[in-house]
Image 1 (cartoon, rainbow over the protein chains, first blue to last red):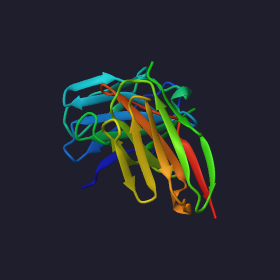
Image 2 (image 1 turned 120 degrees about the vertical axis):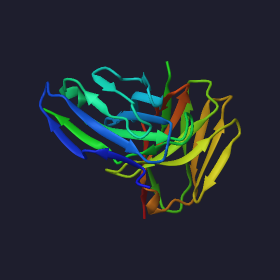
Image 3 (image 1 turned 90 degrees about the vertical axis):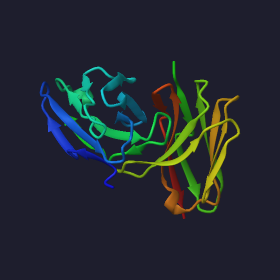
Length: 112
Length: 109
């Protein structure tokens, strides 16, 4: 099993550009989530999904969209990048809501 | 408001010493999570505590949960350099997981 994979590992965007961060898991997990990690602030939940076709907002959803068309994939879209979105983004999955989460390797995003 | 507070945020220990990291949370959740993160790396699950009074141990780390006090502790016994990392606790309310700011642990020889 590859576990949770994320692409790209690094990305630099200019303000106003859009892009999609990819996340996939091969463990048949129902729950998937996206977090951002900023220095000194721990991880903050952006969006999550409890199954294919179901998504919901977390603590900091503004400026981001998600979709879950399959169990395996959970892409995160930045609609119009802003410098405040410079962060490390982690995708995670778990067998069910409340189970331990498995994290991907992260994407380091810089918006200039 | 959901809040998870860890202390201390920074901890420098000598090898062989014991110490405890504290995690206070604001919800009425009965489960609490501990993760480890090495510099520049992703997060690794350490413990999932599922009920009041739960205690789990793995090597030199032991975690406990007191849901009445809304407090979880991560106790380090006889620290070794390999334990140097950042440790996060997290609480889950419904489908929403909230993390503490993390405790950066440095174990010195």
